[in-house]
Length: 568
Image (cartoon, rainbow, N blue to C red):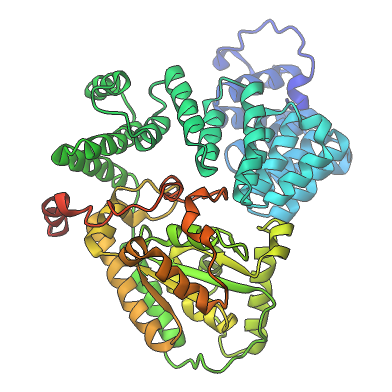
């Protein structure tokens, strides 16, 4: 709580609920503070700012009034004006912890993260027991994806934070992001015990259990959530996906369908319910009901955001222009000590399966979907691909990025690291320029099976094109175009067909291992026993023995899909 809110309030004889009854000229400092506090508590931020401005004009030297005004400015997004006032306060009182903390929070909003961290840590030095400051500091690290810093911060303030449910939950998320989902389970469990009413902690715990392959425990957790709140629809759709025994006559499903008919659900809840119904009806071979459910869900989702359908096309055109005249046979960088395997393709083309198989080998570590090159091209206008210094620097940054995301013992043990971001198919040029010795595996899949799988998958983030079949087709055309270009420019890409991997797994894997100069290991065929965490939409499928039912899966839906693809 802010110090001005904790300041004792003198009895007031005026009716403070009615601002019109208060004469601003005769209002004393404590009355102003109470008025501001009341307005902030009711989220009336503009009213709070107006009152605070009058208070500041009347009492410009009162440090509590100054802070109250700076806080109201922050609440109406006037962060620079707020910071100016906060700096004046701190000049008067260098140990005003709330002012220093608020300065750090404002810097977060201004995206000046170094200044934010500096001030938040300074405030923590003054008061390490501040619940809000600890949470803001951890939130800052989470927002920047500095998960190692979250963990280091917790170790430093362990005794203070061990009973902080928010921080315990953030620790769980951090360990998941760093590829250690098994370790995250304990932190989510603690967060749930500390605050059992926060069902999002239970949902995070369920997700972590799924990532780690603890399917039965995950289902128990999902049912616990649904028993506490049937309309926690994120849990409902996961439960429908994972529980193969759930059918349309289940009591929970019947209750959900009744609620859905009342229209007393949010758009997001309606989306998630229909996504769950797709899984149920698809298992029951009720194809029309199944497709109508996923169509409803995706149309609703698509209505909630704007999507630039030409985005991938433009990126592909750019990448081709960068590397049209580039000679990949001329190595411009020194070879790396660590060998990398990049698995690319459209999402749902079998990339997770291939990674799971390969990472079952004793000398290969699967690092999952790493967004380094995607983030790099988001922030860079044009790469200087003919500069040895540029390529060496980028290579060094990537190597540091990898090292920070992989357990040190795995990093030392492994001969190969897998980076499995399907969308890296766009960036194979810069990848090969930096790492000429890298192994590129391109996974392909039958077009209509691929389209259906993308259309019916619930991605955790990104893939905005996946909610519309025409958008999927547009991205697919760009993907085909650039992969044709890369295969002409880069001669050692390993092109695999998902269907071949499923039908003739051993021979397909031996081909890849030969490229790596590695011997075949029987564990590769027992990939479903691999305990590594899988954080992709395929996390449940890669825990199962090889199956061929996914081949020609689109056959019952071809007419429905074509109808959507041909719409004008």
